Image 1 (cartoon, rainbow, N blue to C red):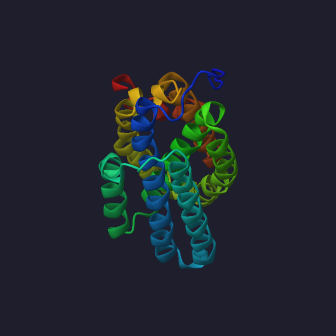
Image 2 (image 1 turned 180 degrees about the vertical axis):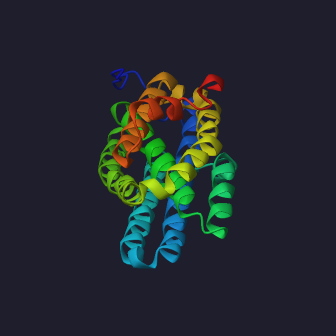
Image 3 (image 1 turned 90 degrees about the vertical axis):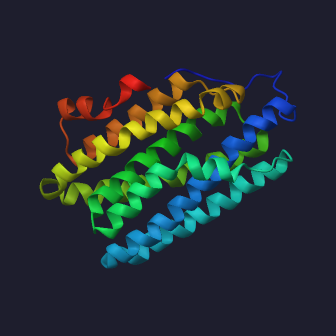
Length: 231
């Protein structure tokens, strides 16, 4: 994995940095809010796991508050309008799947794609973050793995019945991730985060998740690259 480290010359309070940070901070706040709402919805779809899912949703709400504090620390107002549009397609697809009781698709979107996206972004951000945000993000990323694990374990336990739906959800939603990465390419670069490192870390996290569920290496190579040509 490409090694990144904070540039000692980075001015975290410069106009350019804070402008880019407003959109990135908005994205992570909105992402945690989306996750909070999605886990509550999953708790309705999976009543046997409701208590665990409500617990995950509360954790995501705490993460959102942590990232709100990161913005305040830099005197940045998060661009939540941009962030809402950023997540619009995944949000719509999750809501549609939930309305159709497509639990595997909901888990692919939230517990695999969004969580792997978040983990990759946080991993790449931590080495280049300001001290306050680094501490917050380090604590958050440790907990995100438990959210990823819930989806992995449920899909693994039902693998044969859900495999086809998982593949379809991957085809529908993974290209959206590559488009999302392109949308924040320049802002992420201002913060010191390289797109190539983000893509690599995401593919590692996502590939490991698919492997844990039960997909073969050949399956994973095909699924992980879906839509990558446009990234």
